[in-house]
Length: 191
Image (cartoon, rainbow, N blue to C red; front, side, top):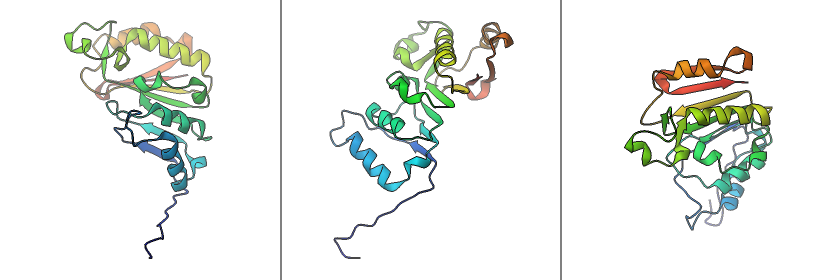
């Protein structure tokens, strides 16, 4: 191969993208549109059905996420931190069937009671109040979404009263069912 030839690889059958990154919009060498253009030269974006920003603590440029959401026509599953979710352009997620939101800790009350929880921004803390807000918003405004998964990644998992709280607030009459997986700190809602 001569020095002026560039090896070109293309992966046309990729259907899932998982990002592991600590880049931010402030990083001078990172341009979201340039990254996106390089990505579309590597894979066929028309085949992507799942997009995953799985690390709650890592930073991902919101501009890149919005560009991807607007350019993945078959996308039906998105995983990202709630911290990033609140920054999204909501019209870009209307076609999703599955949404997974990641939180650092769970606190049954708002604001959280312990000092450690006071050190975290509120958009990293899952509370009962926030669960109700998210479920109501998705069920009323995002008709395509069938499954919402909430994951608590670090410090505290769900407390002992959480199961009873779920039963009181999400009865069968509301047509929203749920699964609680205490060992994995996951609650999943079905619409």
